[in-house]
Length: 588
Image 1: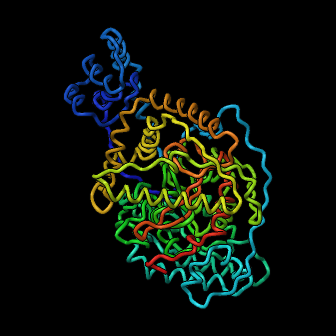
Image 2 (image 1 turned 60 degrees about the vertical axis):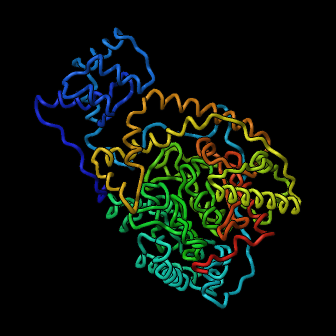
Image 3 (image 1 turned 90 degrees about the horizontal axis):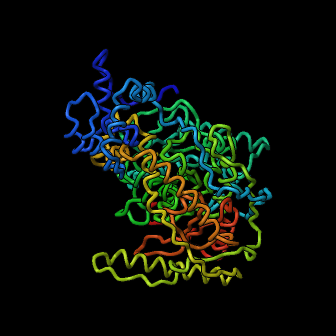
């Protein structure tokens, strides 16, 4: 791939010294124990010293990390193989030279459907609302309109795409010094795309509801000719010579890219190499992450909509913090080609908008296969803004809604925030019941998913192996990034390969058990980000109240490929409430 700089890698010594050097590097690897690493823990380093061969003593120490208890006779056989002519060291060097770049996926493919469960048969089709809209008197009110309304103004030529683009570019420049949500303004590209949109619309070639609408991309989506920094200082000047599939699809829909928005360094948190992205409702808070910039910019009316990504909460968490509507699609419905990889079996791309219907419109534009991301499934997606939601089978997480939250004298503010969020969820359930929707208790099953948390970090260590081996990631530990990734990458190098595979087998069992527990429900009100990011289920969140001036959210988890249903219920809630229309102090 052209123009993608790589961090420097370690260079092995030449000639006969290379085998001894390899063995010293491999002491912690011990292929029979699955502990490959270039970095040794303290005890193992002390045992190894400058030895040219693997000894039984080293193996005794190393096997403790793998939870093994082989006898000395068994370890002697392992040592013999590791020290023999057919040792795996040269093969390991071969797969590191040339370096495997982040964009190269592994050969395995993850699908969220449990074995034996067929893809749901659904009908597609889009019937969005067509509101009767007049241009607002103020630019601020115009900037905060949802896409559904902006689209009608653009289609009817009450507003041009160029006007909207200049408005959002000006707002990005004005409020970014406070929010720190922008990495790069794509001004020249945006003006070119907006001018083309205006020409096409004037000629009667209207492409649909995103035509001419300015948007912002989380800065892990590659766009030719722009920096794609991944929020991390080692990549702050990176230019990737390709367009991500999501960018391509949105460009084909006529959308106008105005900015590459911030993300936590390598997709964690809200701290990046430029500082900490802020919540426009309360600038004393970060905007949460890792889709920090999309959350902050959308909430402050700096873009028409944005695109975020989630591996374990990075759409839902910043959407909650910033008071916008976020949609994490079912795993495998949106191609990740051209996006930074963190975890091939967990990464998802989705819309972050001002309304549920906006999310539906953007999702329709970006979903579907592209022959590049083999994990993508392409079932139809249906959206009818006038559909009757009362036929939905809806549950609520009984424990989260009904159980009283216990006092914690050491963290009274957290307790108060959780209680307010619970009260707001209870109130939202009553609002939905008042709209004629039947909602029944649902008991979220007790599944041992916590032990699988290392799946994400182990895959991320592989995705960023070249960076870790170069040592260039250590700069990320310092302010303003304050990233824990460097330590995580080094730690995960000692995860046994067998244990990773066993974890994926347990994951299959959990997927099946959760699917069975879901029963006949279309969705339930509630959220378990750790569990459902492993199982691949979709989720939507939207603002439903406030605590100390910052938004709380109503969260809904759908069945697999039940994106239509959760967006439908979210839309029904927003039809009878106005939380999603309120403006924050910054930008409003």
